[in-house]
Length: 255
Image: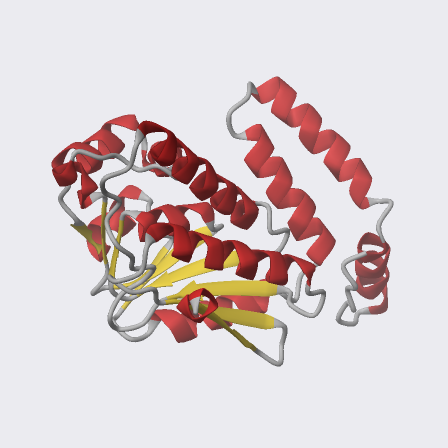
């Protein structure tokens, strides 16, 4: 049953649409384990070049509120959740989250672990679990702060209020905002364009951005230097340069 909580619809052009529906009746750990299995499948499938995470009209990544946990149980749940989010963050393939509806708590944590968020104007975001005496537990407080700043993150967490798509776009939580109903097709177009680029360069570039974000600039630039040099050992770089000289479209292999 758990794997029905998030289904994969593969596209011919190498894009996998992952619908993370969940249910208010589903335990949080069930949904996290389902996501863990799906991300392992996506990471190991060389035919998939990009991933879109989306929900249903009923919601995105819905599950039961965490409750009645012992100290050890809550720590284990947080460890599992953080492992799942890191697995998504290290997928090695571009991953966009598309939100057309309410995206809160675990759903927002999942969206924050993707590369960036595309939203419809009817979307809303927040961490309302503060009303139950809880905070994010999958790394959401840290990822949100790195995206929108400490003060705005504290406001969102402390109030438990949701913000609409316009505000999410204004503060940089959402990369692109479209009229309701247009976010998914526009995100598909964007991801299809991204997937025409070198998979190896995207993977290396994503790793450099993630690794360098929290360290000093000089050290981060050294990471970039070494990663740039690594590109020249890859087939994709040679193919890209030759295609430029030949005035044709490159045929990247990801190697």
